[in-house]
Length: 388
Ligand code: ADP
Ligand code: MG
Image (cartoon, rainbow, N blue to C red; front, top):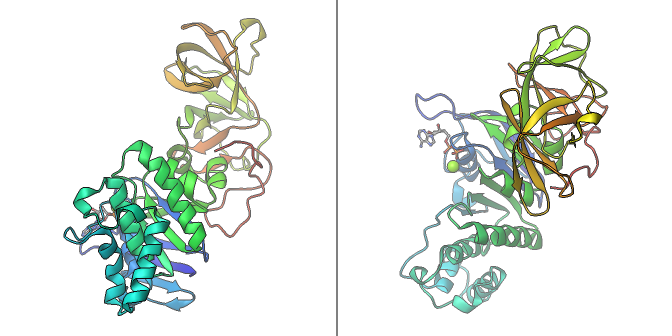
């Protein structure tokens, strides 16, 4: 099923709008994640798609048909919440079967479909158990089976993994993704967990304070964030930032140290004005570390090692540049001591964000501005430059 939201807004009574002018589309069979911090309007959006809340403004279309006035039960949706309530006195099989009973499906087909759904979520060995005898992860599996047994055209998942422990979350991510692909079911999932969104989604829609920030593939959002909010929200460890301003001779002046460095390459820098306040930003793997003071260049950013964190395959070096703390990955072979002088060399991959609007002013490679909608292609996204 293809889903479209056209200029959808939601205002709860006298409150400020919880969702503002949201337009997006989800293609048939796609898994789209709505990602954003708590309170940004994710659940509100999902509940409008489900038909539980009517939008204050705008239209919702399923396969091109306006469904604003269609009742939830007639929308062909399956829903799973963070803590899905199962019927406590029914066993697993009866819980999964329940929606089919409501639909008036004959007993034999009910059994067949319920057992199949249980098998898909790997709960076949627990059919006679009551919900109270299941772990949190198993209960969520049953909830998912109950949602897909109806063969809905659209699966809506609201933070389905948030209540599970970290280990189980990883497994369930893979399982939901596998099931979603196997069934080819259009899915909209809500989460505040960027890692979950990056690892599971075909597309991600990032929201903040009720407003859409950007839509794209995980790689597009990670490599070419439209603004500082998206840049900062995605990725772990987070993107580094150094406050700076634009000086007339095409240089950046770093606020903390007063150092000026030239800006090379990139695109989209034409409209800058002298003194414009910006953030120089880069991810922990996007710069080179220079450890031998003899090799420092004028244009390198100088700092000191604050501490070195062992992460397994690499080390994460905590560096202070003036009063700003940043993190950069280093090879295991590099010799690094606390307090030693160190330099950071910017290669092609760094970003400049306007400090007021948050807008991304510079892209790593040539090619125009990041777009908010998913319709424009993004030629500047470096192919497979980073693994996610
Ligand atoms: P999220 O799911 O992203 O955490 P929500 O969609 O639940 O965010 O909430 C968005 C905003 O709308 C919040 O400010 C919240 O307080 C408000 N809100 C959510 N549900 C209601 C409601 N039923 N009545 C009034 N305000 C609500
Ligand atoms: Mg929510």
